[in-house]
Length: 60
Image (cartoon, rainbow, N blue to C red; front, side, top):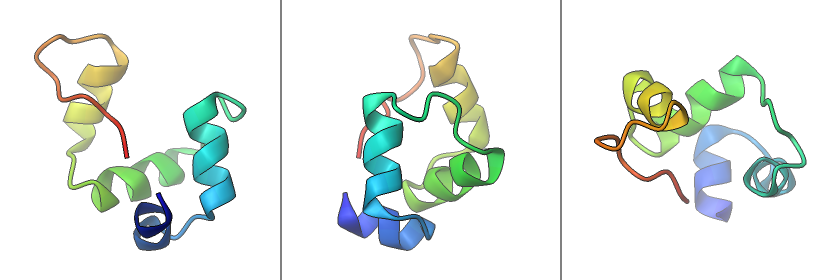
């Protein structure tokens, strides 16, 4: 978690809050930074958020 947070330029606490739902709608640029840190396209993130079964599982 710490490595992904550092690569994305967010704090581990912010990432923890996003993962636990305490930040239910993170800022767009935070989502972009996390997607880049996880080597995911924004299409993959969008598909996963829509429940596309073909999309990759998102976890750090």
